[in-house]
Length: 206
Image (cartoon, rainbow, N blue to C red):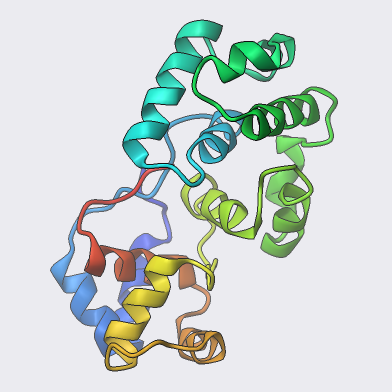
């Protein structure tokens, strides 16, 4: 995984504006902001992993990869739902994966267009896919596309970290989170990444 070119500037500016982030940036060196695959497999993995543990998700993905040889839009579109369910997927998730595959194959989801779309336009496009909500789309923008200014307000980890660092460990309201994060723009993805690190030093991959 390659460090985004903007990272040094982002960390320097965030540390200068926010004492909490300054401390976290000094504490956590190194970076793992990126994904393990292409756009399709990253989104497919996100669907597989919904509402199950990381270990269980990896087990299902491994069985899926073994059955299909390679998880691609073509191989998923050809697969029958019972075969997908045999890999450990629910019927609902099997349907979501087939819908995702068909949207890649028919051009509804065209990755070549995505660099020209702003964050909200791309989130709106991704959430048209069954099984992809705003949180999944935001994780895709942060980890796969390395978009620098995504603020996933519904993320439980970010809520918990902001509660601890900015609200004396009391529950924090979304409007207050948005207000605090206003000072982090245009590097809110980077700030979020360091706040996640304060809860779990091991970086997440998508």
